[in-house]
Amino acid sequence: MTTNMTSMTMKATAILAMAALMLSACKSDDAPRGPRRTEAALQLLKIGNNAKRVYLETGKYPAGEATLTPPEPCCGPGYNQCPAVPALFAAPSVWAALDFRIDKPSLFRYAYSASADGQSFVAKAVGDLDCDGVVITYDLAGSSASGSPTLVLTEPAPNTD
Image (cartoon, helix red, strand yellow):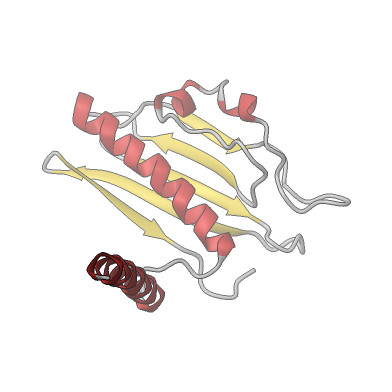
């Protein structure tokens, strides 16, 4: 009986901990607000974290530029997402340096541009979420004040698409 009670107590504690974690995430001002915001923010933060890793290893952000990938807007008859074409992320070497590619359909196109001295970069996520011709842009700026890499994510104003 004691073993069963201990097991039940452990399960209840785990469930309560998970519920508290989920509740705190929902109340956070930093919590993503919907799947569309989540995609852009998560993908840009992946780019940013990989760029920071390269900076910490080499003292510079990855050099180069990648224009909006995929190159064409993601709206069309029967679909409102960019198709997954990982090969598009293989051509610009900067995507490889950032270990970045999109492997499934997405709502955004991505771009990256580093400064000539490798001490800053800007990455963008651009999308027309409801295919009405109104585009929104998320910007991620990377800089390196005093040799410490930092990231700043700027989101579009609410309800702009």
